[in-house]
Length: 134
Image 1 (tube, rainbow, N blue to C red):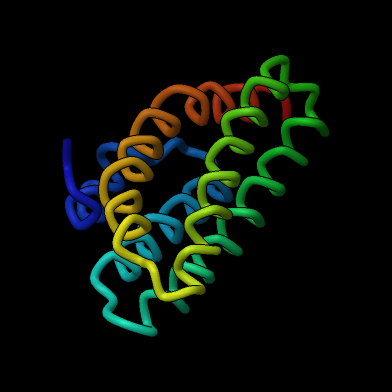
Image 2: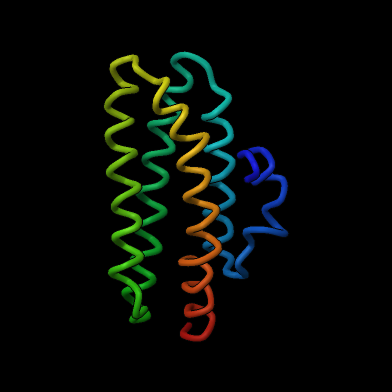
């Protein structure tokens, strides 16, 4: 699987869904992940918190669009979001106490793999639904 830098570089070919709002949000998410991954010390903690805030806003906006267009997979999609937010919250709490090594590893491995799969499956289906229903 590609690392975060490669994911950012290949965004147009691999992750562009054709929905401007989703594409802009997803690109910003990946760039913020990449910036956080390479940050050191206090900068990592600040960027990880910013990533958590961005992700909460990202998911809330997506879920609002799903609800507004009666997306049939809203509950499943929301549950996937909630799982990631729960993990991010736990890691954010650890980072705030100076314990960032596990958060860094999770970001580089688990979160990037999750985004790759989520974007190609759940978000791809959502983008097609939005195109047909807006």
